[in-house]
Amino acid sequence: MDTGHHLILFDGVCGLCTRLTRFVLPRDPGGIFHFASLQSPYGRAVLQQYGKNPDDLDTLVVVRDYATADARFLTKSQAALTVLETIGGIWRSVAVFRILPVSWLDRIYDVIARYRYRVFGKHEICFMPSPEERSRFLGL
Image: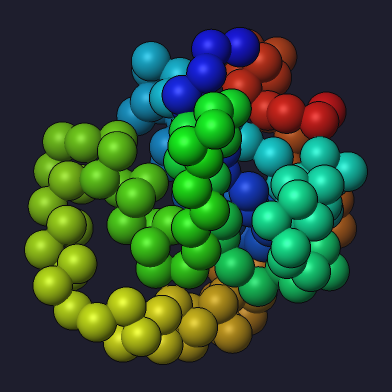
């Protein structure tokens, strides 16, 4: 695995989070993003490494350059914006939202997170990648 990739930690039973993962995979043919569920031993270890509660599953996490000394831990709106900006194309235009205060963006994120299971569903088991995608998922 090359260094410099970004790690997405997602709620593996959340329908919205699974959709985000399935959205990113085909739009990231270069493999910039790697993935792990928050519930996995790997995901829990990463959260603990950054002093976060591994039982707190209400946020998307991105660790930029996770395999380097310059790793940066991002959550909520900043994580979501980073994912969309990084996959590029028309999605890069979400950068315009960075002019808004992070506290505002995080409040919007929190509302979406609060209702995500009701709107997008909750699975009994974590999302499993296809054999072709498996190398991008850590801790499986």
